[in-house]
Structure formats: structure tokens, C-alpha cells
Length: 546
Image (cartoon, rainbow, N blue to C red; front, side):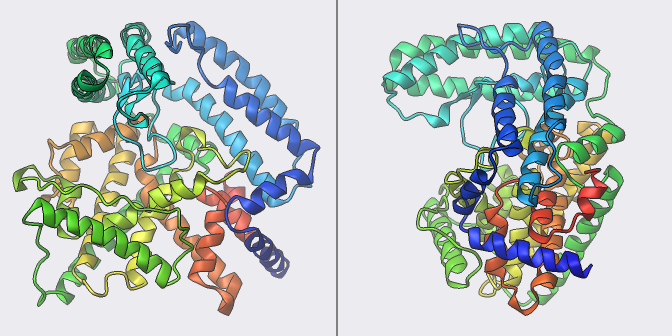
């Protein structure tokens, strides 16, 4: 153990010297033009190969023939990867190798188990109206979806041509989907139909917006909306005959977590973690309520202007706290979104609105996601500098955003407003509830209806509306991507474990800022890989079979 400790300290010192993110990592690439260069070439080739073939009219091909052709070529990529000998490589390059292998395993799992093109109507997403706060869209969707949030209006010439092409392709995409969707996955079809209702409404809004800026595109938007409506009706007409499960079962869940997301915990272990965090959060909530019992309750904003002021103050105050208290390095380029200022009537408030209206700071902490995206936009690493496929980053991105809420609470963020500490435990309870929903859906013990009922009944104060978008959208993501719901809680535990390991290794030299800055320098990759690289400890890698 002593030799491991010495090696780990040397590794940490070397990594710290390479900070900030991007700078040191780019230099490391040039050290070896042999096998590591072969890995980089293979990575670039794989990233191109895993994309579907796209027709001249912009329609990606997910037909059975096209997917069979793609699957047939995967073993050759895996064979080339296996031929690369990494034994003499430093840990950072072995981590890169594991990332590439995980992506290949992700594509293998798509073909072998998830098969979203034939099992999941929601996979055929045709429009997204807002940017995700994590590296890539949560859950899988077709290549080339119309991300309308990327464009400025009125559209310039390039934007107009691209939006025209994507709108024109929507009827063909959905026509192909009718042929491809053959699996009996009742809940996925139900969730897909619900998702299509939202897409139809989004296309209506787009058509209205185009009417004032690019009226020539309005007919295409209306045609796309009609195609989405027809597709939703087609789904609805077939759902009554469907009886099959949408979850993948415990063995496949375990395989996916181990081989793709590199999470060193099985279904059973993650269930224990989520259950314990639920119990802890509910107990600590009651302790906080007792502690704060003489303080006035948190009140929602009375006006839109007050809501706007609260949001702006929360964003500015959090950035000031991060900088002044030395939590982690915050570049001048980093900004937090202030958020809107609307006041939703009480009867329409869903979970996150209930939290945000009482105090917006806890959710602004989770919005650290945006700071992460801004930091990673400057990451030039040839492998880690682009979002990993298959949401392989979830344990790190969602895990840290969740862990940060309690980390900053303990660091003193809510000392001036102690009742906001209650919200931190309510948030954690909901995330533990969602983790349990994710697990039970994939084990086949629950249907979506069971999960909705459980979430509404178990989350404190009934803040989860059983007919609200929050829980239904979340469950859609979790059935799309097994383990995404658990990543908030399991990833949080992994971040805390890493912090404890580094504190033991560093001793009196440990600082929160030094720890977090070094962790950030590794990129948005699985927490298990970051731990291996930062500490040299390989126990989790052995558990993962590496």
C-alpha cells in the first residue's frame, strides 16, 4: 500500500501541474506517436462509423438492413482496439483507452439490447427547443434532430437552408419509424406518444415564430406538425395491443453499468445506495426543520418582478461565493443563467417550481452544469474534449451537480438562510426516489404508472404532480438510458468517495479548491476513471474487470 500511496501522490502532483483543464492534457498527447496515436486514429474512425447513413434529403437510415450492416462492422473495430497494448502506458492514457472501449461497448449494447430504432418511439425525436445543461442530450435520439435553440431569428441564409432541409425531412423520418418500430414495449410507446404531443406543440410555436421572420418556411413547419400528429395517432392506435416490458432486466442493467458507464456497482448495490440516501435525506430534512422551527417559512415570490430579482441575486450570489470562498476556480468566461421571472399559479406548480420559488439558490447550485459546459468548451483533448457517447459522463456530470448541493451547504452557502438547507434534502430525496424508479422499471418490477405513483407518494410534501411533466419526462429518460436516474445518487457517492480518498492521500495539504480543480481537469468522464487517475487506486477498475 505504501508504494501505491507514493505513486498516487506523484500522479496527483503531476496532474495538478497540468491544470487548468485543457492545457496540460493537450501536451500529453504528443508524448507517444506509437500505440497511443493508433488509439486516436481508431477513436476518430469509430466516431464517424457509429453515425447512421444519411440520405440526400437528410433522413438518417435506421432500417433493419442499415442497422445490420452497422452491427456487422463493429467486431473489426473491437479487434483493432484489443490489439493495442496499453501495459506500459501511464494511467491517463489507459483512461483514454477505457473511454474508447466503453463507447464501443455502448454501440454493441444498442444493437444487442436497447435497439432504440425498433423498441422506442421516443428515439425518433424531430425537434428540441432548448439546450441540455449536460454534455449531450439525455437519452438517445436520432442523428440530426432539429435543435431549434441553436438558431438566431431571423434565420441567416445558412440557417434557413438547414432548417428547411430538417423540416422537410420530418415526414420521411416518421414514415421510416413506422416500419422500424416492431418491438412490444408498451411503456416506451406510451411515453413516445406523450413526447410527440410536446413536439407537435413545439412545431406550432415554431411556425408562429417563422411567420414573422421567415414566412417561406411556415408551410414546411405545418406539414411537419401534421406528420407528428399522424405519427402520435398511429402510436395511440397500437398501444392497447401492447403488453411487453420496456425495462432491460437486472443482468443487462448490470452489464451496461459495468461495461459502458464504468460504474462499479450492480443493480442491487445501487438499490442499497439509493435507499440509504432516501432514508438519510428524509431524516436530515426533519432535523433541519426542527433546527429552523422558529424561523419563518420560505415564501414564493408575489410578483414576476420579485421572481426575476431572486433569480438574478441567486446566480450572482453563487458565483461570488464560489470565488470568494475558494471553492473552485471560476473563469471570467463562466456565467450562470438567471432564469425567468414568471409566477405560476400554485395548482400548476410541479416539483422544481416548488423548490425554486422558495429559494432559487439550491437549483442554481445544480446549474453548475452550465459552468462545466463552458469549461469543457475549451477542452482540446482529442478524446475527452468532446461529449462522450451514450451518456457515459452521467456519473460525473449529474453526480457532481448533486454532490455540489450538499458540499456547498456544508461549506456555508446557506448560513444566511438556514431554511434553504431543507430544500437541499428535499432535492436529494427526490433524486433518490427517481433512482429507485429507474431501478424498478428496468428490473421489471414496476410499470411507468407504478413509478409515477411511488414518486408522487414518497417525495416530501406531495410536490411531484402525478400528471405533471417533471416525473413523466424523467421516466422517459431513464427508460431510454438505464442508470441515468441512478447516476445522480450513485455518482454523488462516487464523488464523495473520491474526495475522501484524496483527503487521506494529501493529508494537511488537502484543499477543497485544489481537489475540485484537479477533478475538473480530467474532463467529464466516468467518476471511476477519474478516481483511478487521481489516486492510482485500481480496486474499482479490477471490479469492472479491467
